[in-house]
Length: 488
Ligand code: GLY
Ligand code: MN
Ligand code: MN
Image 1 (cartoon, rainbow, N blue to C red):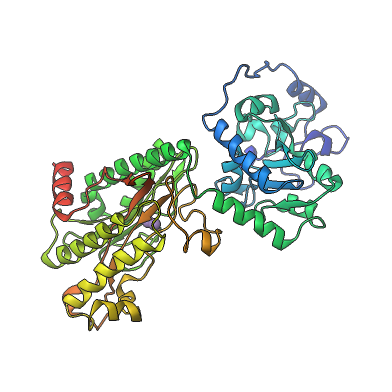
Image 2 (image 1 turned 120 degrees about the vertical axis):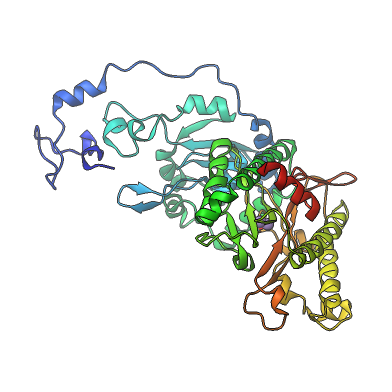
């Protein structure tokens, strides 16, 4: 951004002297005449008769559940603040999951406060930055003024949209300082709020709030399931985009794949839900390969693990391992088909009443059998699993909860998640893989440098499961046919 566009200091912070230059002398001061001009002559743009956002009824129910869990207490849940990248440039802002889950709002500096109304019950208020003040020049002189960053909703508009009272967040630290009774907050999002609450909160009690909000998200409501399906549908289109430009990726690098998927994510959604893994050739064996700066070669595989995040902040998490040429080699197909069989076994184990670990165990069993069958490890499979020997090549767990965070519900207690039981409305990934590192001397040469993962987003239903990402092919034959169609 050019220097002449750097916002000026608000008038009230300017020295009184007319035309006084700022200390560094780079920018002209603001004359009384200009300040007066900028104060007036603006139309009323207040939006009236706004309808509540689609998830308002659900966010209200989530706040009620939070209220029931912490009677007589004051939960304080911040959205977070802009993070400076350098000088006056900030990283893209993404509201905290906890705040967005409870309010449906995504603006920086927002804070949800549930004020206890007695022994039970709360009044929920969202604290927000109001419209920029034109009287003190904030709207055009401050870097966070609306003239620079765009119009915000007025507090009245926010109340209509979010379905709860809204107040000026700049007054919140003072209000919190005076607040009586037990307070809890979600840490690591907003240092101003944390400072205001220093003497009122404890680490242990705040952690209980974080754990509650993680576990509360395990079962998705109807709005959330719809959003997850939208995220997956966009992701399917993003994968199709990538297949169509593989020749361009071959002429450049993995970055072409990253950029192609990102375009779909930004046009149809809010963003990507996590750094896209665009791993060609042996990069597929690096689990979180996000550098994406390698060559894309015909004859190699491309492991693409990517997900679109919707405007409401729900993300997909899908992986396909594709033959860049359009056809798997024999060894690639053998490994791919083994991972497919493992994923089939895993998906079949996803149903209400099953333990969370069941799908992992089912998938791992198939992989262990294959590794024994191929002579890579001494059997039987039960021995391999007992000793965990398959993990040299399977590397990671077979899946995780999915929602607003790609690794959703991560703060949940072990008994509620990893050792828990599946219920209708839970959504999880099933993503087994086999990875033979390029320098793995324990496997024959032909395996080395091949990594395969297949990942789908599976919703637990009343009578089993639904594969939200069934719009992408999974068997090796289907993948080849799909690629041939898209490339023709
Ligand atoms: N994309 C990260 C994962 O699959 O968990
Ligand atoms: Mn995943
Ligand atoms: Mn993934």
